[in-house]
Length: 247
Image (cartoon, rainbow, N blue to C red):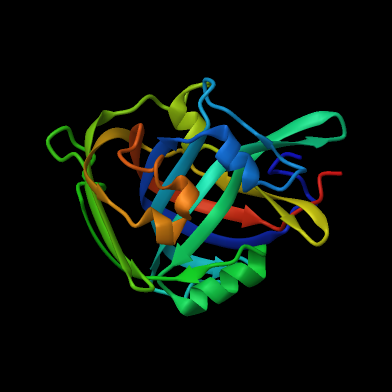
């Protein structure tokens, strides 16, 4: 089901900017308990990953309408990587375990457009160096947010420009996932995602102090300490299409 299929209808367009992807290796048995039975775990080099992805969403345009409702908002989600069967073919993509946004209105629209629940957080973000993209101006990101009574914080800084998403690379696996797969009352739904090429950096974690128990649950707490690897990206233009039943 290629993204250029004439059957696909735009749900929303936006920019994902200043993207942080913190990646953790998790026991696949823990992931399995949180996945619908129709989905299989997709591994990266035999590793089962959970990614905490934070980004600034700008120029959010539901149904591709002109921008105007939102100046921008923060979105942080926890995702893992899955596959499902479609007519004898295997579709690969990511499955969102939990998603948080800093705008109540945007969260309501995203839930309506995609069926993915969004939970409200109060977030502050300080970033630098993403637009310059120079060796002497490596990007950094500092996130702080509140969810309920808990506070979370992380800070990361780029080390070097990463590979350009070659086939089989970790950058391709994490940042070039062009399908969001979820289960609704209508069965498996696949949201195709079209995005422009992204400039990506490998990064290091300066600090990571997140209340994983409140964000994702007790089972994940022992695994989501210091990340296995961190990626930063400038991000770019994104189009998310209406979910399709792959059957």
